[in-house]
Length: 242
Ligand SMILES: Nc1ncnc2c1ncn2[C@@H]1O[C@H](COP(=O)(O)OP(=O)(O)O)[C@@H](O)[C@H]1O
Ligand SMILES: [Mg+2]
Image (cartoon, rainbow, N blue to C red; front, side, top):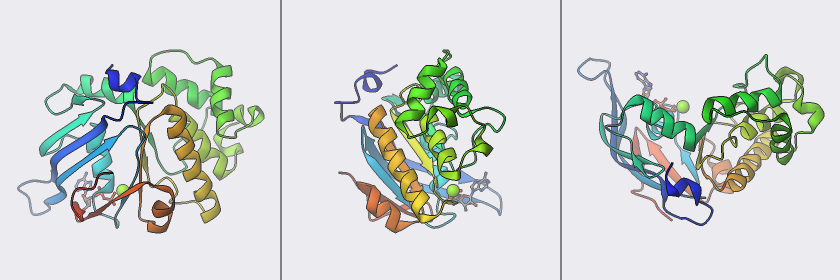
């Protein structure tokens, strides 16, 4: 594990760097798509960054490449202080499990596990260690999920509570980067605002950087320190840094 990960509460070095990253699907075929074109960006510890762009602009591709879930066609990616391109899949997977958590739309909890068990299984997957239920309940409590709700199945919780459990799960193992892909897409405005606030709180608790993808400009503008605009796989307005 890198020293960046251990000390990111005070360390403002980059947790994520993309340098001239391109991603091409179906190269050499009529269905060829350039999902990312020469994307260069840097995200530092504790940054809260919005990625704004219409459907199909490459937002999800950007997160997938950033987390090492997809190999870029060109360019380099530094995650938690390590260059991903050229590393083996298992090495990338280890770095990802140690440093990155994803939050998606509200429905990605394991449906047959309680809220507490959803956190515990994340602990087993990400760090290989056992999480006591008291620790899981304490994390849930930080996101305003009472212990009575912690013992319920996702379907027995409100939409807002389910989303906060998904956010609490992103805290397991103290990641340095939280990537949220349209986390509020199916929530009403009030619940969406609460979810973004919970995400910010989660990033703060973990001293993690937060990247929130959305096509809701107003929401990102209100809650993010910086916005990166994507259009047709390209960053619009040049390289943006704090
Ligand atoms: N697995 C894939 N195979 C082929 N094309 C893809 C694949 N995934 C995404 N694309 C294409 O890449 C472009 C960017 O997609 P995506 O990153 O999902 O955009 P967004 O998340 O902004 O909606 C789109 O044109 C999409 O159709
Ligand atoms: Mg998407």
